[in-house]
Length: 167
Image (cartoon, rainbow, N blue to C red; front, side, top):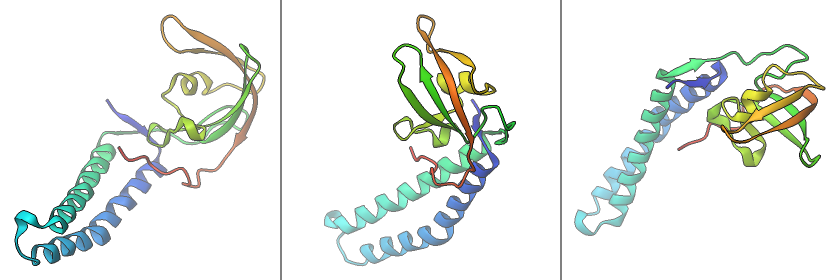
């Protein structure tokens, strides 16, 4: 499976990898050396904590490198009047008339609690390419779906404020 990422996502990941390799890694290695110098490793909590932090950093580097390696680069531009990547969309749910606002983002930035909806989610897939006034059917699974109405579209710039999630 390929991860759908924009070039900005990949650039942010590469910057994080560089930071982790050039700044964080040396600090963590020094912390491990310093803790090791304190003596008996069998009862040295500082040593194990330092090793754990070093390993978490290395794991995050591998994760980001794997994400970049398997990425499918998708465009982050869209037509002025159509829903696309990084657009903020206001929709009204037909079932109850409630209105919600979502920003369409890549899977790596998705966070439904913060209103960031992945382009690969059912609602993200359904909304892409639609215009204001369109009635959109969101197919959740084989047995359930719902309709919503696109109320407004705002072309928002990707300022990187919604960070890449760590797993």
